Image 1 (spheres, rainbow, N blue to C red):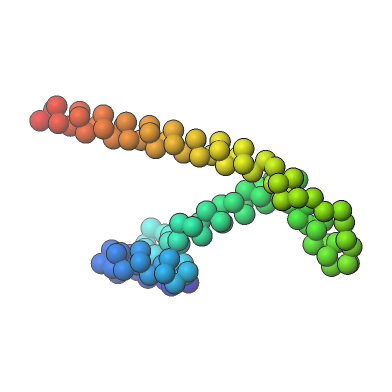
Image 2 (cartoon, helix red, strand yellow):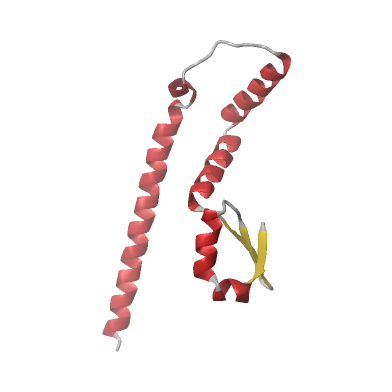
Length: 121
């Protein structure tokens, strides 16, 4: 990880945005108000998916059981990738549509607030 101060981050933001994904490295931006971590968007999506799987008890139990079985050399009946992740296609579609709705609402709010400011001039 690469910690830098807020002033340095502001001065070098374009370079940081290029550096972070190019080097597959997180950048920590530190300020008096707290710290944030900047990571490549593709990596962030993988982190979010991993967290989602860990929050799902069924997925977490299956992962834990798989590690135990591998540790003891137990070979279980296999399922296809589609069977193992049957719910992910539906979840991804729902999440995608949810974010589309949020983006659309935000752009409408932004457009409305811009029009209001222009009308008050």
